[in-house]
Image (cartoon, rainbow, N blue to C red):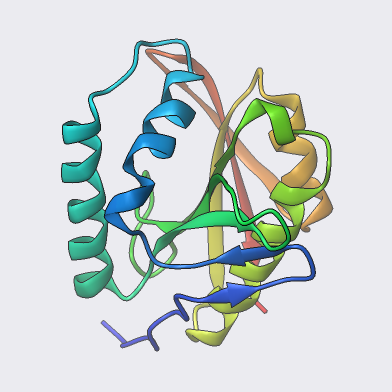
Length: 167
């Protein structure tokens, strides 16, 4: 296995800051996950998840990062690289933002910064997997140059697999 550079864990764009997780993100992270409509995890459970994310980051050199707006300073979601359904060599890009900030280009802006960070690690390709029903997310990935590879069927429905070469 070839080794990759560690991804930068602090990224800044014109409107956004992506940074490492803090325990103080737990309540907002809970609120974000509750928007999925599958119940609200406890803050304690989320604190454990944040600790697991930080541990995974330390061992893999890739990270899922909280996204906050630069001017408002508020937590609006997360974006980053995960192993997910893929591999450490070709990780997945993942993002999720509060519904109240959808449609403003934040996901595209955050994901573009993560793409640049992924390229800096020396990787050649990224994946993304998105529910076939999620047209806005598919549009973000198309804007970023991802191309459909195949569709799989899971318990949650059809999943579209997309890929993009780096840089």
